[in-house]
Image (cartoon, rainbow, N blue to C red):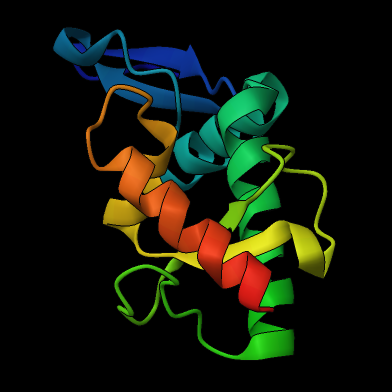
Length: 133
């Protein structure tokens, strides 16, 4: 089969079909955008680090558990709604209700920042709230 000048045959990296490509696009590895997306997604899933994605899924699970029991989380310090869910003992796999606590993003970050001057105030408020319950 004769090709027009300036075109070459390539083999798709995903589906292994033969396709034509211009010589200046010789680095193209896929016959279509669909093959590129499907291959990329499979590659990413196989080689994705477990750390970040795994942690966010565990945090989302804690949030779902909290919402099912108590409703929309409201910060225990500043009373902002739609707050994060904090694990009191620091173990993100421990989703017992007594280990979950609602904190707005700002208070949550401050609580985890050991150098923040606001941290001691947040600790005091949370301790008072826990003793009241």
